[in-house]
Amino acid sequence: MRKKIVAGNWKMNHDLAETETFFNELKKQMFPEDVEVMIAPAFTNLNHAFTSTREHPIEIVAQNMHQSDKGAFTGEISAAMLKSVGVKTVILGHSERRAEFGETDDLLSEKVNTAIENEMTIIFCVGESLEERKAGTHEQVVSKQLEEGLFHLSDVGFKNIVVAYEPVWAIGTGETASPEQAQEMHASIRSSIAKHYSDGIAKETAILYGGSVKPDNAAEIFGQEDVDGGLIGGASLKVDSFMKIVNAFQK
Ligand code: PGA
Image 1 (cartoon, rainbow, N blue to C red):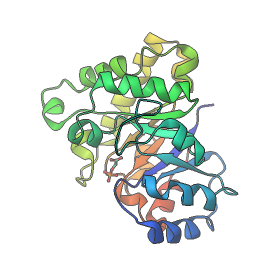
Image 2 (cartoon, protein in one colour):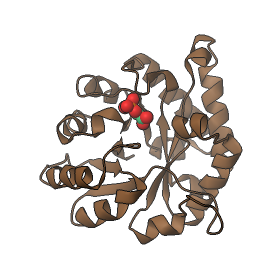
Image 3 (spheres, rainbow, N blue to C red):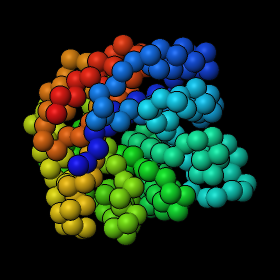
């Protein structure tokens, strides 16, 4: 059975005090047994988040990492540093990293290799821009991102991958892909995985949807056959709305 996951991506939000308050509240909540709950706070708060949730079924995730093991890379964070504060999962290829920090498919494939060498789980983001969606090239764009960023991995390496489909035009805009659009792309991603690896691996790979998921649209999106959960930005910043999304999982 593939995993169901609801992951919060806080981006550059919540300082230490806000992080403490959030986790004190989140720890009191009951999660559905079959849903994995993850939160990606800022680097500065990872240590606190991990320590404070050690006894709880909450996975603490990093939003990014550097591809090198160590060295003269001012301002960067390595896989070993993340692991030393308890982080075993990293988001790579978020569209904000691709657009604002020039992360290319080539660079991302290096980061993917480093994360795999460090036995980390990767939430690998893919998604098309509005222009690409309008031009009808969205499936090609996503399939190229998968091929160049991920599909060099061996079968064993690929088992550590969670894919997050995040149409760029839906991130932080209040505009969501319709459940049909999400399902169509998720099915296409799963079939690319089946083609490059196997039906078995494709069936086991969790594919999350991200882009303006909110308490009032989560159930419909998560109800699609190939949608295994969500990567949640804005609505993950408050426990109340995040928990409504976690509980929207009815499959
Ligand atoms: P959003 O962000 O939910 O605020 O649209 C999603 C994401 O960027 O991961």
